[in-house]
Amino acid sequence: MTTASPSSAAQAARAALARRLVGLRRDAGLKAYEVADRCGWHKSKASRIENCRSLPSDDDIRAWCRACGADDHAPDLIAASRTADEMYQDWKRLHRDGIKPFQESAVPLYRRTRCFRVYCSNVVPGLLQTHPYATTLLSAISTFQGTPNDAADAATARLDRSRVIYEGDHRFVLLAEEAVLRYRIGDATVMAGQLGKLLELMSLPSVAFGIIPLTAERRIWPLETFMVFDADRVLVETLSAEIAITSASEIAVYAKAFAQLQELAVFGARARALVRAAIEALG
Image (cartoon, rainbow, N blue to C red):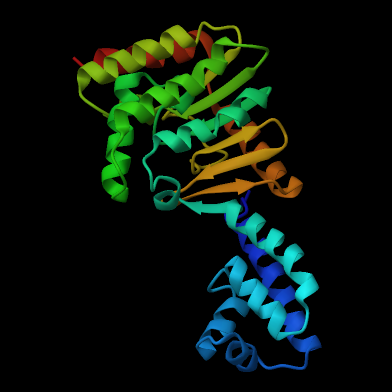
């Protein structure tokens, strides 16, 4: 099985926007450098936009449409550009004012979602994190990204967001690779608290927490962290960006991957045994 690139939806949206701009230019009988000249740009800018090397700003689109005598197309093209821009958002931009505002911005999505499917290959799922674990992790992320470090406040916001586990009629199917239990995010005390919290949360009737053992015979390889919100949206986390997928065909790809990963996971007593073994290994 081969999964689609998580950025393919964003790339496709940007390519579609570029094709529409090219179409306007051709309908006006202009060359790319002529559009650039009419817009007062360097001649390479139009080419970069047409080849998806640069996403145009709202003002760029207005100028392009004006140069092509197609001002009436600008509002629709701006809307398409914003949709493409929202699909792929780099972490540095999302966290430019700290991580706390970003955590808070996701609350409406979490509240309206009925079924969460989450797969994590590298850290404990955010919905299950303790405050010390989240603080350590978010501090490391801020340091790596060079963004304002508000880790403690961001961790509080993350835990506030995670209260949906205890509220309403939400259902959670959460998968993690066994290695996640062993990765030291924080010291032994932080990890012991986090692993103990997992044992507690696994008893909630709304939560199904599965662990994919290191010894599992893989039919699907470890993937990037992703979250499926009902059947409407997938959020994929890469090192550099969060990618929002809303295309039904791509959501189906991630749903298929999740189902195959779930088949590899152990739940209940077997999962608890793996968590307890990780606690004992802390010494």
